[in-house]
Image 1 (cartoon, helix red, strand yellow):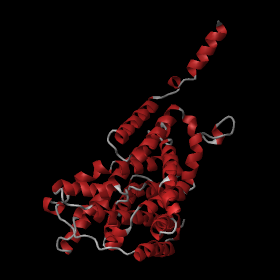
Image 2: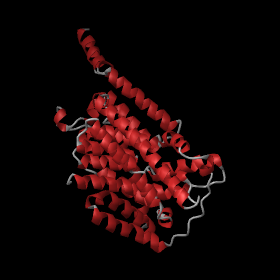
Image 3: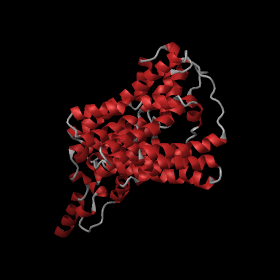
Image 4: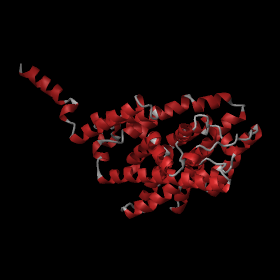
Length: 382
């Protein structure tokens, strides 16, 4: 009987109940909230479902992301190897290839003014950089944190790795992806605050047709120009434009379909679960993480505000031809931010279709955030 009792006792003590802390329970609750938002509310489920599940797993079984040095057999946990692909900038670059293969750059080509709106939305990044310095982050950590303002998860992970801020990569990535998913909640109040009813109801003229030649030349020219000026952006900008060239060239349909479907979804699974697995209670529930989350939100709000205000300026300059709402799409949450511009505009006038107009600043924002990351790397000599 003593053997049976000891065996049962050992089995009982191997359950997670005897190892979980209050912090683990808090993070498990956060994971459930994320799953609710993703499944019930439909907030970027492709991102939130794997992130939330990774968060759930690591707070029940921390060894799932343990490094080989932390285990008795010298073999790391499953998600440790997924996360290594994040640190090596492999997954973020592949995500950009998939985004390029899925995205029509035509609206940006048809309206080059969109580049200005995408650039204006990057104000939040540089504003948050100086705020992070004031809050005690060193220069590289401040740069890694501030890039959250672009609402671009892959770029946030990429820059944190390049600047040697792997210790902050988890909170930065979770904050960036969370704000990407929460765009429909965060942006509309800001958009309505800084615009009038009349401005929100502005109907924009149809975009001019874009030729096939223009669409083919665009990714080639952008790659050459941006990567010559900022070579360190090549992994992101280069993969984004390569994916788009697959799409527009018309001669590699299989590569385009693979990049935009099978490869993209595989990478999202690996990246999402590994990012979620960085949110153990010990790593996430601390003052530094709270500062990162707060700064990311401020940066994202600043970026949205700057985009809308610059949109108002262009509206005045063009005599009312630009709807300021499309400026909010300058953050690089593709295509969610563009959909939000469409939604808010349609609330004023159901016949107003802003989606394609908003896609121009949205795509410009992706390029702009990558360029902002390149600027930081150039400043620090990376």
